[in-house]
Every structure is written in structure tokens, then in C-alpha cells.
Length: 224
Image (cartoon, rainbow, N blue to C red):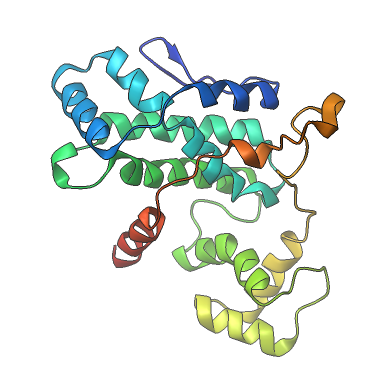
């Protein structure tokens, strides 16, 4: 899917290694630079300003997508969907609200990627309850926190604890666990299969976001 804003193209190329290398050329912005550009864009809708804001956050999209690599979906398509969320964010951002653009954009990126994932999985539709969606996106995280990283069946006690934590039934946890047992992909692989000794892995090109921004956004989501 192409992702564009007034003719600007931000869709990942088929060659993901080349795409990840290309987005590193765009400089990251300071908080002051973000604010100044966001104010100018709100007042002018100048696509050159939008270009600066968006390209400086393409690595943030990759970072978000890396957290959803275990759902068996094409990485380039998830990045494309995340870039769509980033473009929505630039058009809706209110710089005077006090939040950084990167913090605000994170919500839109995650929403776009999650919508794509939900639409791609037959078990979980957009019409399901909020609790079931929470189960879908948190079961693997909970299992990892309990060091349950293999494919063994969950014990009845663990199933009950997870069900209570996420406010769903034990059967829903069991069914979801079966669906999520697919083998996880990995970004810790060489970017160029012909040059595996180069030392460059996909994970090396993921944006290192400033601390606590995602935690702040998660807190806001919880309150909402």
C-alpha cells in the first residue's frame, strides 16, 4: 500500500534492508525543532514541513512494528500501515497541547498497525470486545514475563491468572494461545544475506525513542 501526503511517498521498498538504511539519513528532531515545525505546518500546511516531520519519525514506525513481529504478517506491510498512522498524526497534531509530536504520533502508529493486524486475523475482528483485543495484544507479553516462551500447554492455574488479569474467560485464553503459537520472526538477523558477517542487523536501525514517552502514552490510553 502506498503511503503519501500531497505526492510524498513513504512506503517501504520491497528490499527491507535498503529501506531501513535509507531512513537513517533523515535527522532526528529535538523537542524545540518538533514544536517549531509543527506550528509552522499547522499554519501553512506546507508539504516540505510535513516531509521533515514525517521522515524524522520513520524509524519510530519501525520500532513500533518490531513489537508486532510475532503475528506472522509481512513486516513491510505493517510498516506501510504505520506510516499511514504517522501521516494521520501530522494532520491532527495540536502542538499547543503540550505533548511532543513523537508521543502523539506513537498512538496513531500503533492504532494503524493494530487495525491492520486485527483485520488480518480471522479470529479477532474489529467487532470483538475491548477485553478480547487486550487479550490478543497482551497474551504473548504476559507469557514472556512468566518465561513461558515455548509451545507447551498452559497450566490451569496460569490460564486462570491470565483470564482474571485480562477480564476474559479461561476458554478465550486457551483459544487465543493456540492461535498465537506461530513461530516468532526476528529482527536480529543480518540485513544483507550476502554479507552476514557485516554485523548489521535490522534491530540496529530501529529508532531509540526518548525514555518514558511510550509509558506516558500507555498511561493516557489506560485512563481513556
